[in-house]
Image (cartoon, rainbow, N blue to C red; front, side, top):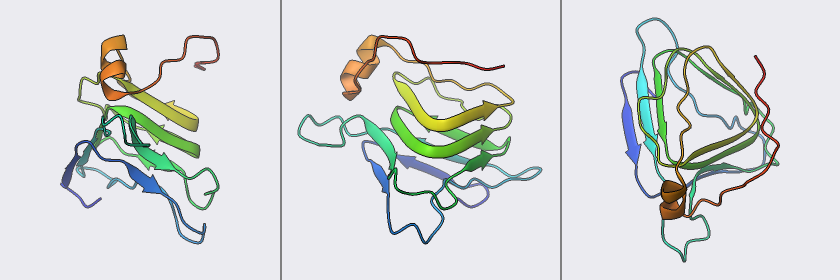
Amino acid sequence: MGDKSSIQANRVTFVLTGNNSKASHLEFPNGNGKAATLSVSPSTSSGNPWRGVSIYQDPSLTNTVDNDWGPGATFNVDGLVYLPNANVKIHGDPSSNSPSCAKLIANSLVSSGSVNLNQTAQGCSTLGVQQWAGEGLRLVN
């Protein structure tokens, strides 16, 4: 994404795939005074196999999949963001939205600011995102 860009993609799914010869990551402008906004929400159509998924990164991808988002990055997301091999670093306070069902799957997540991954049962149901009730999430300070 270029500096000062603002992209809004409602009711779509970005599928990142390929032969692993190219980088596969979300790139925000980094540096003092640079900023960009990416807002995504998934399809809600019951007939869509990608229902509830906003971003899907093929798990076979391993070439430059890590994400390092600067303090000017605003990532507004609803639905599932699946980055299974990515180490995601978020600096500052990148999320300014009020998600109804945000889920992030990543190899690791490090934040030096605040991250809003709120969800409600109604919000997840509306988006078609499955809820999981059980143990398994581990936060490390």
